[in-house]
Image (cartoon, rainbow, N blue to C red; front, side, top):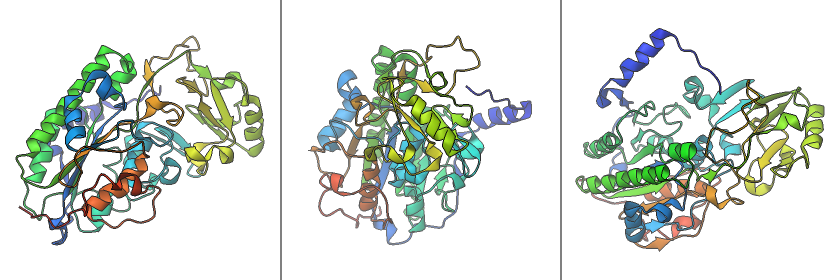
Length: 428
């Protein structure tokens, strides 16, 4: 783990910011009013419950999500994350309709051999630098077509991407009370029609945190599941006060598995002295180093497989971006892999009880949730597992937004829409 030293003045500023009232933390970008044609469109709230495994709802009980499944649509066997099944790549895949190799966020942290710079989700400067991102997030798509948007958190939502930010957004602050976030969403929907955002995101970091710390099959994770499920129930109840045609989509970025075994250090099997590394990602100084490490790692352990980047299986969509590195090491189970041990070689046991990031087609526990409810959703509709890049065209269809080339497809989710999707709702 990297140590980050922050000067006292910066810490003081941060603590002051955390004491600001919520209204002061909401950043408003004046894009002008909703275009008149957009004011008649539906409203969509996209809710992410980080790390909510597809099976948690039945395993632990989740009455609010059960209500959504009965009165709206669901994917009982889950939604398939993009590879790797980790937070930032998948949130950005959901919001752009692109696989990580195409939108550029190939891991939570990685090295870019072209820029000769590193990206990490804990590096605020990198996360808020829109030049790292490729694709058109849904809030950018909406804003460019005259429709206002708002983000109460979503990974990357506080970056200027493609020259555009949401009309309303906040810098991430996990201390803001969960219920207060819902209150703000409702307040946005009570604005005048010209100002009211039609696309809103809402993000919660649980049950991911509990799943990591305690493991996915524990009482602590069950408690976290019950907490976020209750939040969903509160949101649905509070939306009845706005009297608007609001479609709510509740999903997650990935699932969770119980970690097995000790750390696997790749430098025990291969000479990585000619590599820049980040986690298990390997960036060779030259082709000879890549070829040599591949031969050394190939067949070295049953806990992982290794490919030259160009040969990574097509179903992973993970072979065309230099940020992925070369060769590419992929775990065959819930194992913790890194290029090098930490500064203390005696630390061999992972400190996490639960982990994700694995191939979701090989490990069902990586699957995410998907629920949708609202006036544009068919009650009781169920869909088989589908890829999360398909959410983008689905939301764009509801909102009547035109989209460019993406990796996702509308077809897997088209059947849960009422026909036709109504785009002439009253403005109220």
